[in-house]
View 1 (cartoon, rainbow, N blue to C red):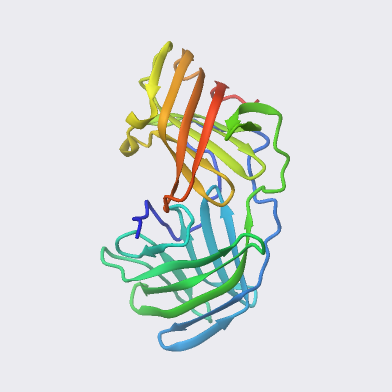
View 2 (cartoon, one colour):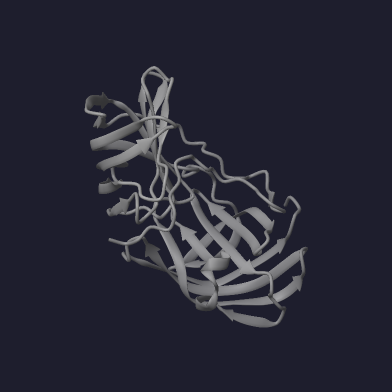
Length: 291
């Protein structure tokens, strides 16, 4: 089992924080959600069966929702890359949220020793559905809620902005073909320069250290993940992390403008399934202004 990076219960769409700016073409979930599939589980021993279920994938994040009528009853969010693998509530920090049918109580993962898991057993990329299992020991201020024997079957998924236009900005060669898109977020955080490009549901994100200098080439493998440094590519459904290659900074005005070139190889996670190669890449980003 591959350890997951981080998982939270709530949905966090693409947004701008700190000193970041967003362009008018910021990714938003334009695709209509699709509902269906079957979900069954035990909630403190009571059988629950639901047929209104959906999964939406945003920036590599899997967001699962199951409804009774118009009300959400069970949800979980996986932030650690999508694959046919297991996400353990204790080791991989998965969280869940459950609402009681009368809406008077909600239960969440709490504490340092959660129990349960989420397992993706099938991803049907033709029909765009996912199947798997789940369980969790959840709590509120006074009670426990044991979610057991959870099964989700053929729940449809949509990918954020998969149907948007790609954009005309030439970003790089991706496996030998042109990768074009548009800049959608850019700015500075406490740790780094951050900017990203979107292209019909695909995302290429850069988080580069603040200690950059013009005229210097940086080894991507030396970037410090603990300081949120690195380059990530999301092909719509699957996530890839740059593992080798280089970024050259050709122009830099601290806090205002960054320009450079790049090439790298990225490997999928959480499963080491495939690799992507980016060559002839370039960026020219004015920070904090709308392009």
